[in-house]
Length: 190
Ligand code: GRF
Image (cartoon, rainbow, N blue to C red; front, side, top):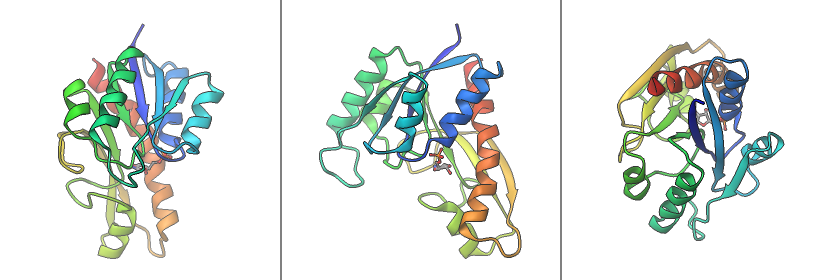
């Protein structure tokens, strides 16, 4: 019956959508059992609800950027209760630490919009533009305790074009992300 996935996101959820599309197309033997967000109004929750997928909000106790231990414990419990086997971070903007990592050892993936180890952290497409590189990309990797440091599963180059804006570059990277993430999940699952 395939892998049971849980998705954590803070934004639009286009990567989650790409995972769902790959499942629908029969390219990925999996199902998404639960989608959680630290942002109650994130569009990723809307998309999930429209599909009838169970959703929830992670209560980060008023912290703007931290992912408090108690919230990580709660997140782990909810994922386990939903039968989740593999956790996919998809535009999730908080750093995952011990409580959640220990609950899913080697079972948490992240998609990052650069060729790691280059440009970790936020707005990597802007970092790439500012650095003046002619090529950037995206990476799917296992999550460890560092920031965007875990073992790489797949990565692919994306060219920076003359005259690129942050928007145009990010859009070009996202097209590749949407192909790469389902592929990486397939690799990890077999
Ligand atoms: C993606 O560019 C991802 O690489 C980054 O955040 C963005 C999330 O986009 N970590 P979406 O919510 O999947 O549309």
